[in-house]
Image (cartoon, rainbow, N blue to C red; front, side):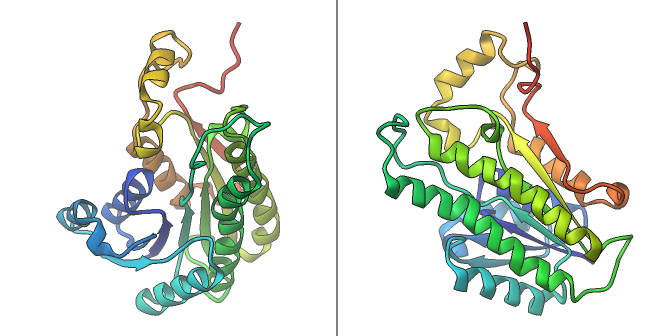
Length: 254
């Protein structure tokens, strides 16, 4: 039975990924910012689905937490076969690019990009100790955003952080391919989560206006199913690839 480590898995997209992989036969190491007792509804979802999981509290932005959680998950389950870098933050205040503070930039980049990079480094080192299963030693999936390509001038630090994840995907795909570890990126669009709840009216109106070819909100399960596909053994001659889970928003239209 394989093990998947999912960061930011206490709710939203991360929880949906943890559940999707769990019901498809994975042990799941759930990483969240706080202890399991703070998320009773999330625990209920995992338990009701009969998922084998362990909960780890830590800050993706802190080196000691990243290293500890990779070590403890590997000790508990034996190996780590999948890392899903889902954890991320939005700016605490949406500010015009000319008003953005350095503190906001550091906060968002520290979690979204730096945290991703060094969590991947820690997990890859663990994966490299492991034997090959199904043509690979491990799979790493980065959850970025359509914002890696689309400008939002009132949250520039978020866009830069997600663009950085796109390059990290390429870099680690290049470096880890000889090790039998394959790296992918998923770029969600407008997904119904806590993060998008503050701009729900805006996005609902854009959907109504026809900006999205598939005219509905995305849901966390849409992203989770794409993660499951990349985790399979069906993509063992691909790495560094990405998929847009955005209702066709990426299509340029006249």
